[in-house]
Length: 261
Image (tube, rainbow, N blue to C red):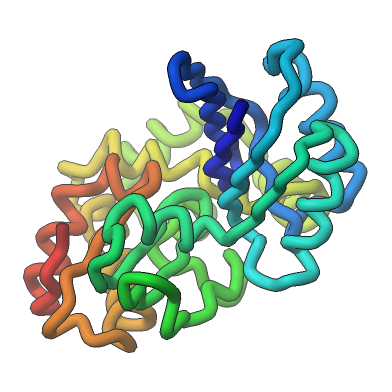
């Protein structure tokens, strides 16, 4: 019985298979960079165990955001062995999972655009270059958090047309003090910021929203993708933001001479 996970900061997609039957389900996101051991334990016990069969899990393959170092990987591996009881547990970064699924044994530039963002150059067997993502404060260009942060800032500073600001507050009736508290004082501000990205997608035909999105993806390409051999290698993207904004991303990639797929 094999359990495979693709985990981001917001959600985890699970696949359970015995080689004949396969089941898919979701739980909350697991990111050891933002969560302590007790947070992860709670998701595994309250979210995962209830969905598993009685049969023992023999192998776990976990691909997760925040699993970039051996320390984080060891933490997650230890929790799985203790809680799930699998004989074999392998933990890798979400970039490894994306690269294996998108490129297989061929080289390529692999990108994840979701709540956060990340990228690497994959040579067909391993990551040979990685530009650090740096999180939603110092990096994560092109991510949901990056787009949401810019949207909120523009709304609060009065830099958007009155009609857009009115639509924003109608959909998200927050006071300025509530927004600041959620960003600076409460857990998972990256998730909170990313929750506003769909608003930009819904109003993408408004010039201000299109420019906001195009600027975010231009920042991602210029500060991340263009540090790899983008002129000769194809660029692959996965993640919720990559899907929702795929037309805008394709336009910006073309403008930057990037072979986007």
